[in-house]
Each structure stands twice: as structure tokens, then as C-alpha cells.
Image (cartoon, rainbow, N blue to C red):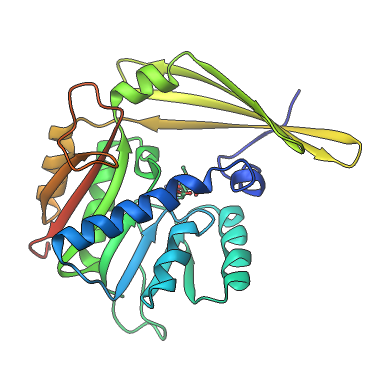
Length: 262
Ligand SMILES: C[S@@+](CC[C@H](N)C(=O)[O-])C[C@H]1O[C@@H](n2cnc3c(N)ncnc32)[C@H](O)[C@@H]1O
């Protein structure tokens, strides 16, 4: 029986090696374009679900004060190594969404940010509407007035057509993977079973992780953001500056904090 692990435990060690870090690097460039268009110059940023720290490192290179939060100790271990190598300062926080709280050193008050990001469909991992809502509400407490929240999400179309009932496979010199997914229409969810092989000397080690994502409609997203004190300023077809067409696979959301919530 192959060993099955929690999501982002074993996958962490190969995440960058199989090129998955390229997505958030691209999202960072896209974010910089959005910020420029909005003439918004943050001085502090929090990357939610920062994974191996690719985005956080690039934010830190701008001279911003940067925090990265993730629920996986294994992803954060990789992030810490990269941060040391890059000689930048990023504060890593090991907490799980939706409940999270970042305090100033010494515990005095909540840490506030100008910009919060979350990339690579990380928020699709929140499988209940109440969890996504709680996440947005917690986030409100950590954003400065008029602060921006920029994130991308997979749509139902993506889970149905890109994930749903498909098999993908790749092999590299030291790593190979097979991803199989199943889509559940009524729940708007998909499971992705990642079977990975990592070369260990002359042998190959096999492990598995199962990842589940849920898609939310645009109207649900807007309602949850609005009730969490945000105004949705742009809903984009991700990586572009136009509205998502019906059937778009990935959306980018730019929301501004317009009020404090209780
Ligand atoms: C698809 S990866 C994206 C990582 C990174 N943002 C990137 O673009 O490379 C999803 C990340 O979300 C994190 N994650 C998933 N569910 C989480 C939760 N409930 N709380 C905190 N982190 C979570 C995982 O540990 C993982 O690092």
C-alpha cells in the first residue's frame, strides 16, 4: 500500500523542482502591474498560503516589510531556506486559515498590512463558505484602511474541465509525478491524487497526497467580500485586465478594505 501523506507535506520538497514556483512568480509580476495601474505603493505585505516563499521573497526585494503565512511546516521549511539564501527578511508564520492572527513582536496589537495576497488557488482549499467568509473577516482585521487584497482562484469550470476526471503526468531526471483528479458537480469540488516518485540514489521512493479544492461562484465571492468589509474593485480574467468570460478557468480579484468590521 503506497504511503499517503497530508497535502503539502512530501510535495514540499519537489514543489520548486517541478516548476510550481513559476506560477506565483508570474502572479507577482501581474500584481506589480495592478499596483502600478492603481498607483498604490505598499510598504508592507502579507502573502497568505505563501508556500515556498517565492512571492514573499520578491516582495521583500522591494524593501517592503513582508510576512508569509502557511499551514504547512514543510512548505515553510523550504521557504526559510530560500529566504536565507536570498538574504532578504521575511517573517514566516505557521498558522492555518481560516482562523489566523498575527501580532506585533511582544504581543502588542495586531500586525497591519497595506497589501495582502494569496496565489495559486490557495483559497480554493477552504472547502466551506463559512471558512472562506471567516478568512476574509480575519483578513479585514489585518489590513490598513484602503489596503488591497489581491488573490486568484480556480473557477468551477477549471475544476470541472482542467482537473475533472483527467490524468496528467510528467517525468524529470530525479522526479516523476502522475496527477489524477475527480470532479464532484454538486459540491463544486475536485480531488486531485498526486502520485510522486523521487529518486533516492539508485531507488525511487513513491508517495501520494490527495488535494481537494472547492470553487465559489463570483456572486458568492462578492457577497462574502462585501460582508467582510471589502469593495471588489476588479474581477479579472487572471493575468489579463478584462472581466472573466463565461467559462474562464482562473479569476483574479482586487478588493479594497473600505470599512472595519466588528
Ligand atoms: C497551491 S499551493 C500555493 C503556494 C504558493 N502560494 C505558490 O504560489 O507557490 C497552496 C498553499 O496553500 C497552503 N494551504 C492550503 N490550505 C491552507 C490552510 N487552511 N491554511 C494555511 N495554508 C494553507 C498549502 O500549505 C500550500 O502551501
